Length: 424
Image (tube, rainbow, N blue to C red; front, side, top):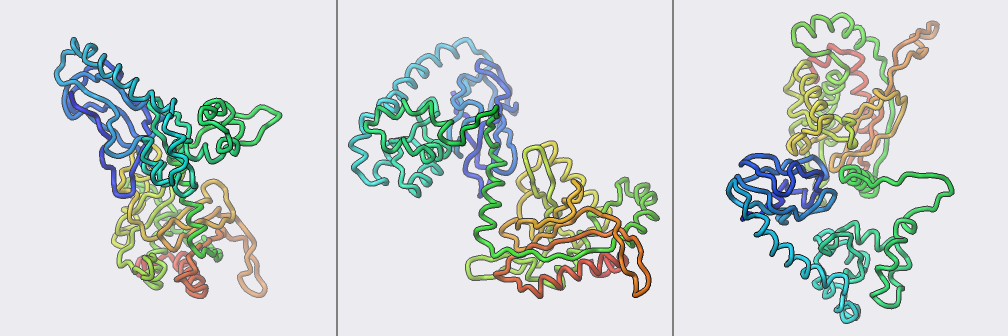
């Protein structure tokens, strides 16, 4: 019998959620068959069978959080499953007594008097749950676990912390009685019908990172506007031949990517990041392109954008967007960007203040192209296709004048598309 374990999934990923099992207990699988799908903070990962056999037991169910190296199932070797049920019987009977101490919690009173560090060892918990419990001063023995075998996870600690009545319950045995009221206590009470949905792991991670960006960076936004007449004229004249030659549409993103690269070369601090007390100036241009997918916003990266032509940039963006929407992005597609472009204009946004994609120190927001009257000279007005652009930046290392000049450079390059062939 072999164990099915959660594999290492990258330096920044320590746990995941079982999204769905592709097979059921008792099913015969071949080596290389996909057993289940794990949802992580960034991408979904498929776990395959390392050998042929029968799926003997599913230990971690769909929706449960698991950590790297944890056993989530067992696989019996060989194609025949005749002895598999008999072999699984003892395992099942052994697992029940193992989980029994959790509800009884006979050691809880003794552990309460001890410091948090000593109580941590009395209950099985994920690393993130232990860390959060220590930060909040919560005894793990007092946390109610939703897990069948009593393992405490980060969400259990959060739920415990949101219940003001739980800590003051006199005896430990009273804790289960308060569990049914947890959903009502954790949120507001509504007189009219509502639907409560649990955040997906990715959405929760996005929320956490956006809040962290606002709390850790001295973020400021500066604005300008671009006359898109010249770019729209180029696209109108060239789009058919471009599509015929390269089999890809000539969009706006390639123009903006080229303009951003040209401006980053002129203002290298905006292509940097902060590492402690050091500023790391990056001599490469990996541009993140924000893409809206079903599970939330993701930012795949166009590598070495300074070395790519318009067609290569458009093709890279189209491929990454397709992967994002089909949930097939790899971790390598998302890591290592130096600057980000986000286009709220595709949804009709006229103006916005984008939030930094940390540890990057700059992000450019594109917006809706709208006809507006523009003064051409002292006597003449024309309706021009105008777009507001916004640069959010980290004021800790980027001065306001530098940010403004960067955005003016982007504007000038876009309004003179021929210059993109030289500067971009």
